[in-house]
Length: 334
Image (cartoon, rainbow, N blue to C red):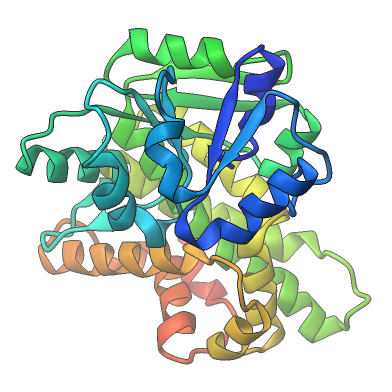
């Protein structure tokens, strides 16, 4: 997604310097050679230049702002290797989706986590973030896309929107950081559960059965119920909840989470699915486990009832307890 944002930025006349992590050396070399990301169907604009990670401090000189696009597995790496060394005055916009569960059952956003950890080191920085239904490959094509930028300073958000908003990339602004970041993180967990129904349809009716909408819609409904309950606990605004539901929809229909859910629904074990998807970054597994731990802890503290969250408990059971993906439908009724 970080790379995909080069397209609207260049369409607005901005220069983009694309920096890879230490894991992206081959990708950056391919970009230098071909002017195109190996996973994108379109070449970059002429206004994009490419840097290996060792050159990142040169790349950010004179920049208006930095976009961080690491996965959930790189959150601490990004903190230590970039944010802690970056000029505190440099604005940062994160596209990383996820939450961190605390011992008290709290779920905090990555921007808040980074700000807390940086403050401990004497660095005060506010980090903005992007949330909403957007698949990177479709953004590259210029498909109509609706998202929101969140942060504490509206002037900074307006500056970022000016750089990235186009006639196809539409950007709303909100100060509801925890609400928006919670919504777009939770959708990764729940999309995994809904995607299982696609695999279950194949298991029960054959590979040529196509998509059966009753079961998918039923799981979607339960996902929205549980997400909404959790987001209300997070104090999320109604706009953030709506964007999260939109993001849930697009994640079910495209991407890595869908692939994993289908494999589990077909009857593959989690380990078997991991082998098939070797090389894919499966952030949905991280957020699913963290949310389930937070829900269980909040239940222990009397802050919620586990019976209200059967889908996230089922997802966790499939990932870590060897449960079959067959959904507990009777637990969804009220």
